[in-house]
Image 1 (cartoon, rainbow, N blue to C red):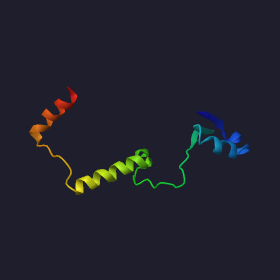
Image 2 (image 1 turned 120 degrees about the vertical axis):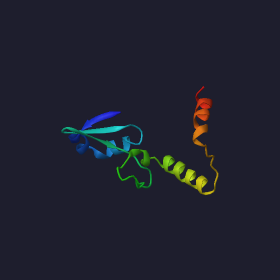
Image 3 (image 1 turned 90 degrees about the vertical axis):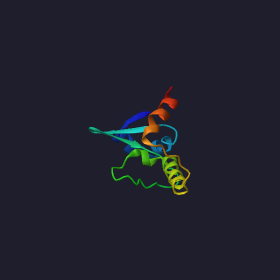
Image 4 (image 1 turned 180 degrees about the vertical axis):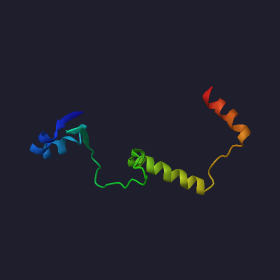
Length: 93
């Protein structure tokens, strides 16, 4: 991780943009910290109303969509309330 000032970034922005593909770049601007985050060739849309960073990861979105498809196809297991404790005990112990 490299922390730079806003002036350092302003003096040579391309250097830090290129470096951001290999290292984490943080820009300190007064009392704030900004981060340069590479996004590849497209900018994903975060569907979260609270802008939760969990949804910034395309793998998480794919997992949610895959799970939704499995639910729609009935490829799920349901447990009765009385069976939940037994199930949890099996996976914990």
